[in-house]
Length: 410
Image 1 (spheres, helix red, strand yellow):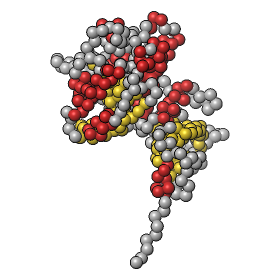
Image 2 (image 1 turned 60 degrees about the horizontal axis):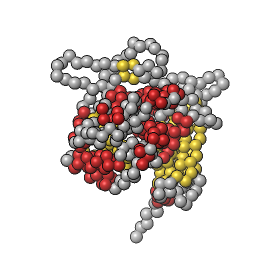
Image 3 (image 1 turned 90 degrees about the vertical axis):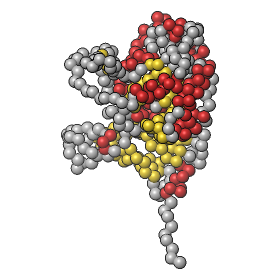
Image 4 (image 1 turned 30 degrees about the vertical axis):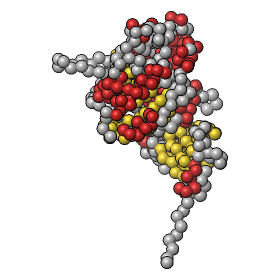
């Protein structure tokens, strides 16, 4: 996953990043070695320029047709909190989108990541919220098997006033809370201080091409969620270097869902999935259009993604999900969004306890709008917090659902 950071990076550095990425891609064969996704993020928009593909020319075309805007907020100190929040939100939404995809994923973040902040002047409660966001990002990236690599497109810095004094004398990600700490925590690297950004991109890709998966059972019984459990992997063969995740935080379960007063994290996750064109595969689901009503659809949620509670004397087995349905016009503007908290009971014939592969089918009728050409269905499993999405092209519904005419004889 190649991500262009366009909210914390100077415009001239963004231009050099695009030039370097294009230079790197042009040296690659027509069929890339691994499926590659191209993403661009600014303060207003998260854009999937091209979904996973091994076609080099398609990635290059998407890059050529992307026009970045001047990140004037990056020069304004009062926008630091928004820029910091965008970085955390971007990491989280990418991890949540690919958590269901098997295998190891590399995210190559080309840009500054975090703005430079003097934490000595930050209130304690604000710093605590940032600490919690860091812990959350480390965990969601780990669970999604995402390794983060950060590349600074500014090259060798000689002017400490460009990104702050910390950029010139330490590393480019500035401040006491450095973006590269997230990369190292996930087992990745941070590359900066060089002008051959195209070579740095190649280094990050090659590093992630070969890897081992090791597991162990920790002996640490502490329940302190703020304590970082460090992992140190050593090698007994001279001349080898190992890059691993530095550790982890205590896993926290998904937050409690209150339909009348949902948490900001829940709302943020749902809106991120709803407004994105990225495919979320944390929940296995399929979308079936009605054969008789072009505005009706059935969302089939695979039983492997669900958790069914054990039956009790007063209540049958049940599962809880959140369904969000949104419609969009031809310009991608959202027309309407509806969210529902669904409490579904299993059929009486299932076992009262134990694992069951019992799926869920949700019938939904969209309010007809002649301007709507696309609908997006988002399903979040309450017990796990995982999210899945499916999209329907509404202007093709009539053609898709028409029953073919009966054959005629000459």
